[in-house]
Image 1 (cartoon, rainbow, N blue to C red):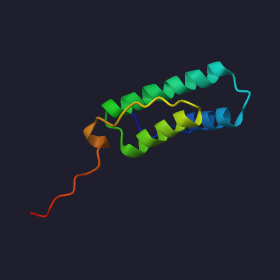
Image 2: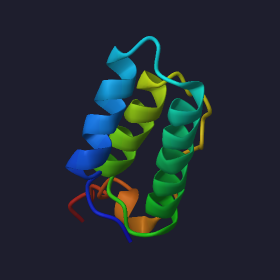
Image 3: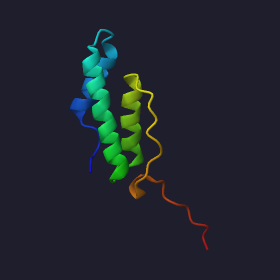
Image 4: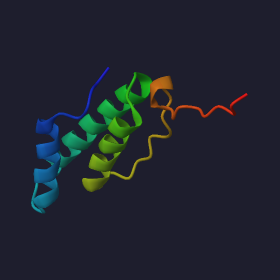
Length: 84
């Protein structure tokens, strides 16, 4: 189970996004780390906001892979009853 992406990871993504000359290996390793965290969040109890932040960070770094919709019960929007 993971919480919010940590500040260290956020800082790394921002630095890599700003640096047009960032080493490809650094970007690839960070994208892979983000994918693993996102998959862990999908299978665990990650909320929608965490999943969205992880996917956004990957896109910022140029990763266009679609990992699909959230699969954990915690990541689903609460159902709205009909009031019956």
